[in-house]
Image 1 (cartoon, one colour):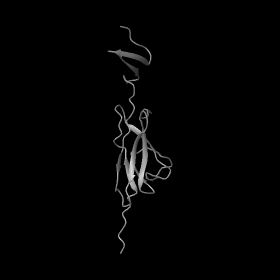
Image 2 (cartoon, rainbow, N blue to C red; image 1 turned 60 degrees about the vertical axis):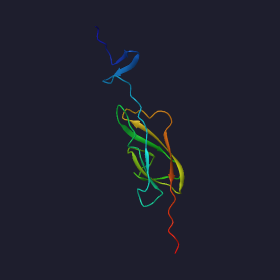
Image 3 (tube, helix red, strand yellow; image 1 turned 90 degrees about the vertical axis):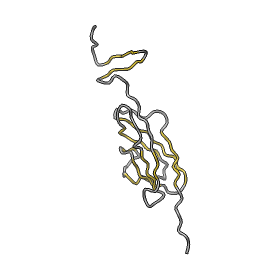
Image 4 (tube, rainbow, N blue to C red; image 1 turned 120 degrees about the vertical axis):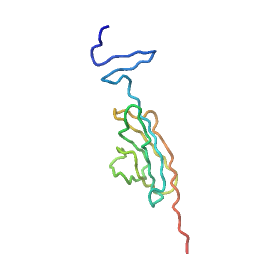
Length: 134
């Protein structure tokens, strides 16, 4: 059998087509974005923690988290100039109680972004408890 030359080959097995470049036999799978909302992590009920550590990548690791918020949301930690950060956990502050939409895309270590629309959750910020009047 003659040996394949070059760096690119196509493998066909039982109707499955996969490209082989370098040492990988299968194409890169896109990562999957996911996050949970945690309330009451600070004394201020308008502060909410967003944790995307449950985002995953079957054939690598998630390296970038791209969050999308409305204009009135402040990122408390980590302090970044943009809303693209390299850590999965953010502490954000909302100006008022209510429901806000948060979107997340993730990118893996090979530069592939999560597929389709961003993962979206509605965050409902609770009302601030009011102390009783004397």
